[in-house]
Image (tube, rainbow, N blue to C red; front, top):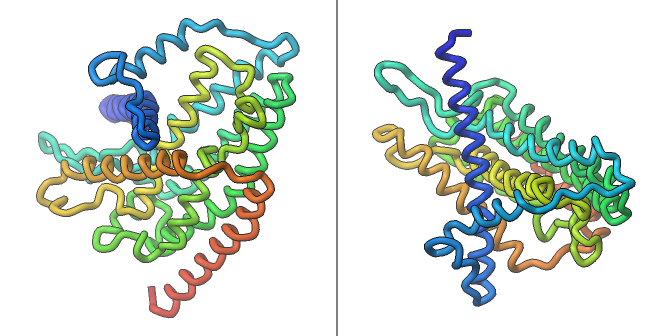
Length: 335
């Protein structure tokens, strides 16, 4: 490994982390403004011009809030849980290609940290499953019955929907004949997989919304039932880490959905102007983020038993049927 390659990886890693951190901060502002518009309000507009410094004000407030640890809590696990939860949101984007390869001063650079590895899909599934441990540990370590109930709900929900999520990703893998995220994006140059896999896309979108505990699947932190759920006992920067994890995972799953089904960075005039690739990618991601906020504003929370029944009785069979039909058509049509 040369020093230049190590430096390139370090710069890319820092940029990916900055994308998640900046995106998390301003996604909260974006969500509050969109929800306000939908409820005929203005939203936060006091901190800075047009309210653009509101995330900074919120961050300063959380930094200076008192850190409390319950007397009966497991201190080490209580502190460790937010870190375990937020790490997957920061590292999962390592395999996402942000654009086509660019040539600068005669040297070709890839716009991704490890987007060309041939097990990118496996990496996504493995990293995405880590977050549930942090939530369960937080619920157990808090020594609070509401937090524990939130942790148990989260583990049951994520296990239930992870099966459908994994099956929904098999469709793009079969069509591209590769588990490399970069190869899947390149294979969508002429036709996005949302056209060939509409059922797979719907299943994937529902499953990832349930995975990141967003409305209407926000059972683990149902305020009316569990008083904020698994992070009921957290405050200050520990609470901020859980908050960052939720919105960071929203950004991450939007990038992954766009990459697998919406062509990633593919778009018109890309061969003539490769710098358009990242713009196309971010526009598509912004559309999916708006869709998630829209769902929160319009749909009520599911009842817990109906949520679990929906995952096992409807989503999982639908994902299985989609995989079987895709495989049969590929064999019949000769690939």
